[in-house]
Image 1 (cartoon, rainbow, N blue to C red):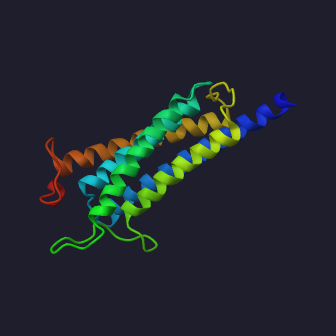
Image 2: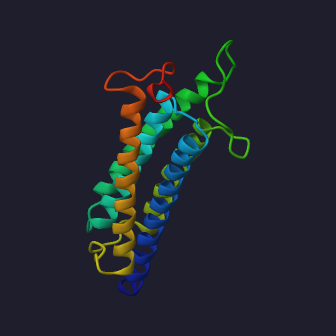
Length: 189
């Protein structure tokens, strides 16, 4: 009986991981669109949050491309906790308005990015907890590159590398090779 459900569990596991990856890629894309289309230059903590989300994405890709190892899950969980710590810190810093310091960025559905990042991190942590509790660690071979899901993973990986590269170039232009501050952005000078 358990052998008959194993292919269903594996397929459901891959679908969950692919959905997480696609949603995170969409979030990163939205952040980049807001940066370039609306001129919202990210603060240093926002850049760290992007880094953590990129780490989650690459952990998910690793998980999808590996076999029975849960190493990609571990990487994603570490970056999810990092995202939670960074975004909680920024949320607490901006809890009370300070003179001469406005909240960074526009609100989306009435919520600013640091709070969204807390929600994203918690959703990732809860999603992986539910995945492991419900599905365990389904024994699976890596996603075949020629399969539909394999091609989707490969396409998402190429897309993530592209937006990661664009993000890296914009950070270097914004901050140079030194420390990044919330004033004196090089892109605006």
